[in-house]
Length: 253
Length: 316
Image (tube, rainbow over all chains, first blue to last red; front, top):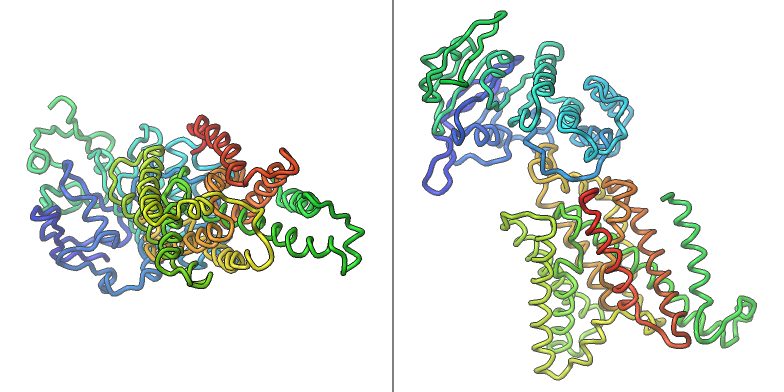
């Protein structure tokens, strides 16, 4: 379990994340939602040690993340940020192989190779594993990065807006894969999402942030309620139940 | 671009290089160890060849490391101020440590090269507008500022002529006893190869590196030290060789990608090949005179650089 204890981050005098306390359960998908500038990405970056917190602490399975060695940490927690800026010419297989870097420092053992093969196959990339990343579509590229994270084989997988720039088909594909990672492989996924309907349909728990603070935190059903959403987004959002999914109809509100 | 072809052409070109020159040397004459030919061969031709191979491989690898760490295909010792900073360092060592040994001069030049490259990386960190063309422009501006500082003080101290000797890369001055400093680049290249994987990871950004548990800042700093070492030794022994560190890694990247462990040997080999060809051309074109290597590489290199600019949408 990831325990976030009164975590804060300031840029100058302005607080971006303020006194956030949240528990993230194992074996679930937890979504961070909220308006722009709510501090979702900053919170995720602090949990994954990309950013240092100004106060508070993050415990992963009872250990303070600041006390973990970076190599050990990278075997427990992986983070994927938006990667559109990457213009490095690597093949899919080379990229996925770097997922084994924490274990082998680049000299792959037979076991590493096996992990890489499995990850590539899991993401259905076997046929194109020797293609260069800059020749792929957005959806394929995102799958390649997720394959790398699978090869990294961490208990916790954190993703910062993985659906950015993806069309509907690929967004659904990625969310289904994340669901499988949790249901089949027992991973814990934490994800920053903009589209509340993807959060509603695919996540187990939702943490709603606004102005750097946690507004609501609970099982998905409890959060996807008109009155709760009004509090978070300042919008009247009717909710329709369809095939057991709660869909927010926010387009005309 | 197969490695064995590169090695084969390197061997052939090396042999050509050994036997091209004002005084003709026949392979048969070398059998006589006492002959004048053998002496020229050992004092001039062999050192020249070694210098070309090391400088070509070294500058190309320096460019490759810089491009990877700055995540910009147009960054190289030429376009990031490293060469100009090195030259400023040489001026400083000439003015203030006139009696210093070569090694001491090397250390001063190295310190300046390192500081210049580091300054560039710091500027890069602070620039919000990370356009692929804009960044090398900033580097060239930095280089020009450093270069005008050098020129100003060289003018004051009346050593302009002496300075411009360092400006022009030239292999004709390479002789036994004047190039051995270049051997420093051999261990540097070995270290670069050992760090290849780390450089590749670092090239994917700080967040990406941290995710994989890589000590990002340390790897970047090691890379900059390697670049500065190579540049300082090459400028001190041969002079400035522009564009080499820029075009060679780009050509290899187009064919082989950016996985340094895979591309480092190719980059080193292609760099040495390219410099050998330009050097042989420079020696043959206006025979018995010689066109300096920095002019040759500058002309051919800027042509290739322009070509790379125009096709940048496809690869860079």
